Image 1: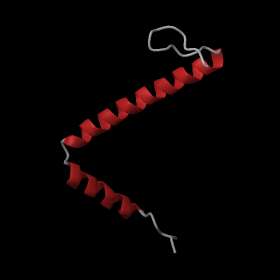
Image 2: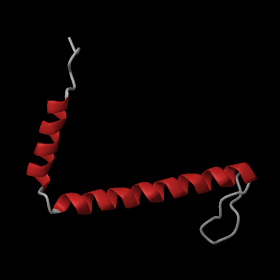
Image 3: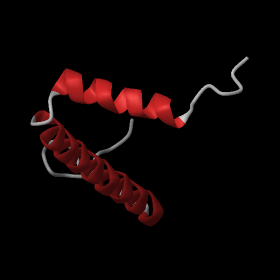
Image 4: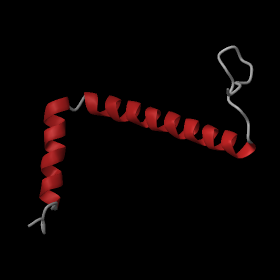
Length: 69
């Protein structure tokens, strides 16, 4: 049933639809902002992983360490 579900011409139609919907001027800005968002997400994930490995507790809103009840 889905043997030939995604062929190269399907991808070409998707690209043409994106260009028609968003316009060629907005696509670079959209890609740039998506890249920035992914970089921020990656750095935050890395920071959380590093904190978990060192056993550090995240800081509370007042800058001190957070205590768990």
